[in-house]
Image (tube, rainbow, N blue to C red; front, side, top):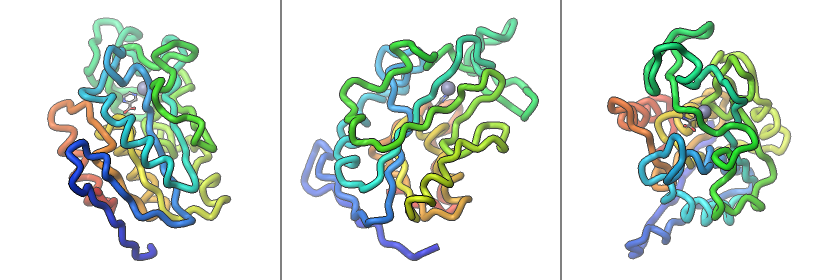
Length: 222
Ligand code: VGL
Ligand code: ZN
């Protein structure tokens, strides 16, 4: 891993919009799941989720490579509690690849909830990675699905562009941002998470657990 210095400051700005990240030519910003269903009024609304849009727009303007991920489930996806008799959202069940948390139906392909937040500058992105589109496999990470085997191809796409540092932001800190950043690091990318541009769902202390896991994995929290 190349040693890197992330310079990050929020000078004088009460709104937090003075954020600057020192960006280099081989850096990519990965914007995780900033979609209507994770924002206010959405099916799986992350507390204060809309607050990430403005800082993320600022970040996107600074990065040479920008990737968006889009949670993109078919109707009847296995991660939906509604598919499992007697189950309720946020229960955990065992599936073929291990434990799976169940969610309210969300980010269904072709629905308003699956679209990006209307204020997100989507035209800044070169690539949109859709994930979770196989009915029987969920996918939190931008790199590999929850079976931990099925690649999204993002690793090779980034390598093909010469990217060696990845900065993650978006929703939700404790699920898709966490797993994406851990997997980026495990694939050898120098990796950071901009916490002020993330919000978490926070089930049973999962925000703190995510921060701890990210630090342990060698991901920088900035
Ligand atoms: C997410 C739960 C289910 C996320 C996606 O984007 O963090 N969480 N699907
Ligand atoms: Zn999902």
